[in-house]
Image (cartoon, rainbow, N blue to C red; front, side, top):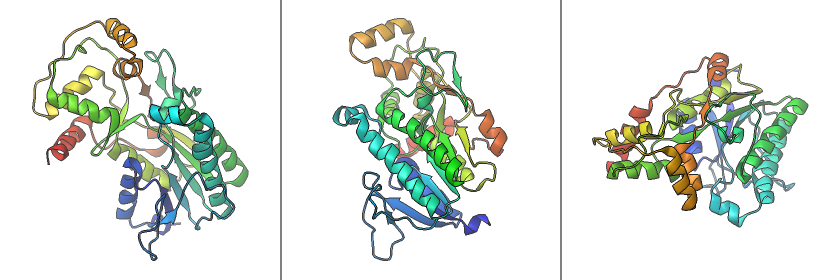
Length: 317
């Protein structure tokens, strides 16, 4: 089948990643069906209603599609986990996704592309580990546990039904419109306060939204993408001081980072109850994308510095 003849569904199209995927696929002229939790904008709209909490009901139907790209799900924010038990994450993220995949397979879908997370490979000692496809998983929170169970369930569905499953595990995703921790770091860089982070020697893989979406779009039609798990990144890992310095320079300022033993910073963070923040600033999480590059012939298309400049331009408009 020609690429332009593919009928593709995309969930989470109002989100940070899903919206960009939908726009990119639109430019390719594919036959698209967006899936959202909101009612269709008009009676003639192609939007298909999708609520993962209700997808297990017998009345839920799916259109005939060739490929489905799944970005929807409960967020992994800690406050959510305090409000909802693990069973809620499994009901929505796992059971909802697997029911959706079963029904798509029954209606002839050929491929299901699932956006998971590199963090399901978590290890306590991450300074010496670079995660690869095939690494033993170790989810540490409700969201990641539900993602790990979903991956397992999707592979079982693929083996039983013949529908191909492609799993993509991104690390931190950044780009114009990003929120949460990355946006907070950008604001910190803009203020250019002197920070005691110059001695940190960690390494973190990240992926620009543009690079992630480019890989996802590649996986929609690439003949080698079926039944594969792909790690993805910019292929240019950075330390926290390197990242903050790049952000500060993007604002046209000279970085002001001060030396301080990372062990002391970690101790102070634990005393102040900020262990999670310290983990993000001091810890390492690297992924190896050689398998992705070799199987798909794919290469990241944009660089950190260029994306940061774009983000700064957007923030100043």
